[in-house]
Image 1: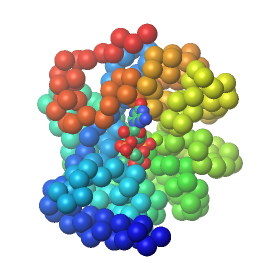
Image 2 (image 1 turned 180 degrees about the vertical axis):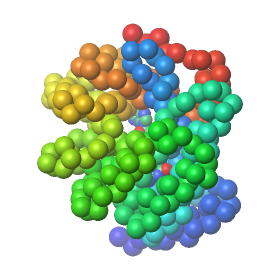
Image 3 (image 1 turned 90 degrees about the vertical axis):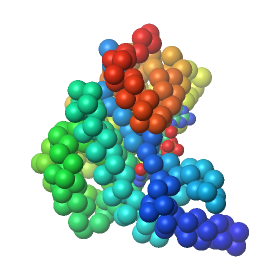
Image 4 (image 1 turned 120 degrees about the vertical axis):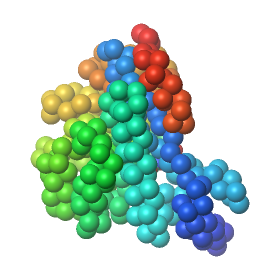
Length: 267
Ligand code: C2E
Ligand code: MG
Ligand code: MG
């Protein structure tokens, strides 16, 4: 217990200065349209390389950022950098990529969240429909009434919303049908079970059918093999993301892919 608490304190104290010391940066993972192999989007994923602590994974430091409130500052940094980058890809490469940004519970819960996003879009000049916010099920269900209001406002602005890690939380279908989200991301824990686990395959199929029924887009996360792309594609999944296509990579690598008009021939 003590050791864990200690580690958290150490992470916290370094994380507070990480932004000003330029230790945080984003990598991007392509999102690939299965029918064409085109890159249609990119998810921004945060990385932190601390001179004192080494490379820290978001799984380690995001929870600390959430608990301590540092997430507000970090969230602003992520959203601003990602939108600026997407705008650059549009201007320099003529590529209109959806840029997917992860939003955590506390960040989304902030009173000024919608206003912040609106101001950010104005500041960066990113066409609103290119921004996609990823919210997890637990984030959505954390305070459903507040979520509904905010999501509707964001949709009115024209922003896309995606439910991340779908299937791992406990989404209420009652709310799901009222939520104007654009996309469900099938969680990688299920995709990983293809083809060994019949149960996982059934879950993937059910989620894909649900999303078709609700007229939502669907994306399979954590696709590592050709089977893990083929099976969802056969069940109507439109987009995939995972190491099979590309790991999350630095900005320049995405730029090079866009410049080369890269298409994945995967089937
Ligand atoms: P997530 O949003 O579900 O992101 C997907 C995670 O799966 C990423 O891990 C990505 O690197 C990893 N991944 C992608 N393809 C594959 C694959 O084929 N196989 C496997 N095994 N893994 C794959 P990462 O970058 O470590 O991020 C972990 C989580 O941390 C994210 O899960 C997200 O919840 C959170 N996170 C990352 N960046 C941010 C951020 O900027 N803000 C917030 N609030 N959370 C973030
Ligand atoms: Mg995500
Ligand atoms: Mg996910």
